[in-house]
Length: 245
Ligand code: ATP
Image 1 (cartoon, rainbow, N blue to C red):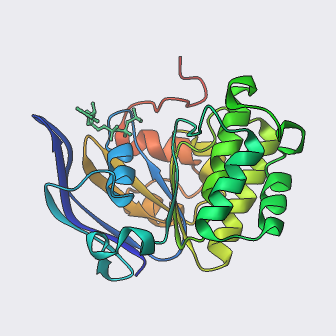
Image 2 (spheres, rainbow, N blue to C red; image 1 turned 30 degrees about the horizontal axis):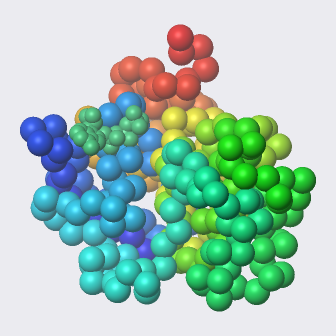
């Protein structure tokens, strides 16, 4: 088992963001879905160890995540807001990450090409569009070594071509035996990328499994698309759902 939540609870003051959530999955690309406030970002932040659970345990490869020394916790994170240093150019970001993780120059070149950042190398983040900042942020996350990639709304701001590139990168990560967890509202975008889904609702686990498995569990037609399945289970539209406001 790659990643496992065992009865994980988390409150912010008197807001219960997660209530006794348990799920587990093997390497692959897993979609974490649910309405606003379902607890997706909280789950990602817990896995990334930005916050700690109030109760329960999170295991990676059978070991509590809290027991990994930070430098040996093989995780890469893509945040829903691009993360960058205002004073560093695009190229300098990659040089810095490469120096931190002892990565060769050839890896930098490969990431820059993959993310389509060649024409932006000398620019500071303030001169980049939102989508290009997101590409920079994703590129920096991918440059380090990792076994587990958690991505919170990674497609926000990307153009269709770049969404396709990032989807391929995530699939390749899984093909090489790594675990990818994507939190997203873009159901159609992840429908074909994810091998499994976890559906959270109001801080609780609604269901987990393959699309076919979840549809079977809820008596939903095998022909139903992911949005139809989602609406059937949750009973309310998801943000970003086609036709939603
Ligand atoms: P969205 O799709 O809107 O990003 P989400 O599924 O990622 O939502 P979370 O961000 O995990 O949901 O939030 C879960 C609950 O916890 C919500 O009720 C939210 O208002 C609350 N919450 C999240 N972060 C905090 C915080 N720092 N302080 C107080 N409440 C918080």
